[in-house]
Length: 229
Ligand SMILES: C[S@@+](CC[C@H](N)C(=O)[O-])C[C@H]1O[C@@H](n2cnc3c(N)ncnc32)[C@H](O)[C@@H]1O
Image (cartoon, rainbow, N blue to C red; front, side, top):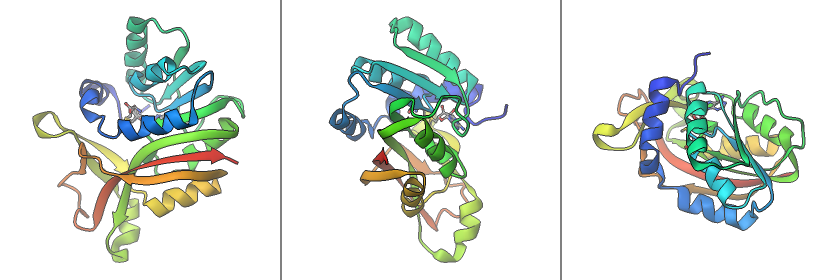
């Protein structure tokens, strides 16, 4: 299966991961607010598993991490073995088609994953389906502002090359362009009530200079907390 974080890129991301944590403080403050103690948690797009293990240490009853990249899942399982944590499990899955029953999880956590879906309502529908009623979704993702409506259709169809990190070790991954407004309305359409919604600075990511519409689009990270209605 062709996917974004295949072998080389997955390893590169994982190696750089600790340098890309500029937005963590706010995210974890929100996690503490909702409390995940004794909760059943989904780490949606878990990457190398670092966050899933952190969620376990924060007191979750069980954490299941899913990711479409087999290399990421391999790295996550390798990291898990070193930590000897028993209540975390990783599995390879496409976030648009999860194999969990409905109403399975209390909390879904997703750090910089949702912008990898062209149609953001696909993963949101799945997360909504597998969350219990009143369950929480806490997510960070790329969100963009389009300066002129003139190019909006062309821009909406184009994938955005994002440079992660700075300097020689930086690398480029592609993301799909979603605006703040699109994301909020998709959340509401997929059965969520938005409780917290904030644009936050992310000094570790920027639109790559190769992007055709670079002068038309600005980038920020978005952090939100939503509850399944
Ligand atoms: C920027 S990384 C974030 C990884 C992890 N959440 C973290 O913060 O370290 C994005 C992750 O989303 C995963 N991903 C992309 N498309 C996906 C999909 N359709 N289903 C599940 N995971 C996906 C990638 O494989 C990658 O591991």
